[in-house]
Length: 176
Image (cartoon, rainbow, N blue to C red; front, side, top):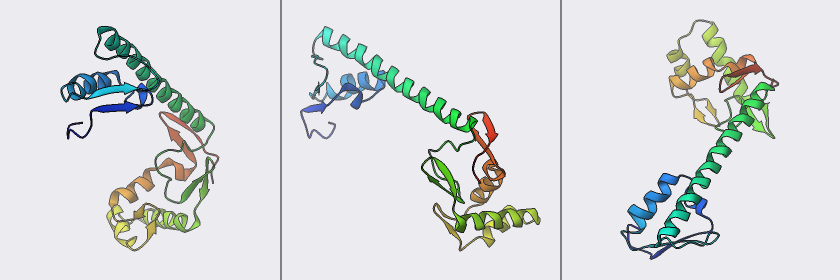
């Protein structure tokens, strides 16, 4: 729009543009209108050049935002529920030493050996920075052990002691 390469923004449904009421209003009033670009939603028929069309857009954008918030809330409840049952919550990246397969943590033997080595070195009194240096040359699905934060995150992760945590929930894990 800002490059002037079109005269209309076409979406299938309003929530495909954004699920934030603030973003929708901003885009329409501060981006599209000044550039002379029309906005069309194939599912909702309203004319944003009229007062009623703008009002309808405002109402629909409120529902789009509410839908986004409900989805977020349900996702968080689902992930907390998984943690309560001892299952890793998923999302993000798999912990080093595990692969996330069909909703379960499965031991990745090559990486698990590296995790064990990190714990053994730490238990022997080796510093985190020295462990990081000694692990140079090993690799995981996320890269290598190049940063002390990688070693620190493994050492601080309760998952390796059999506990699953998510959003204040801590429970014995079902994983090995």
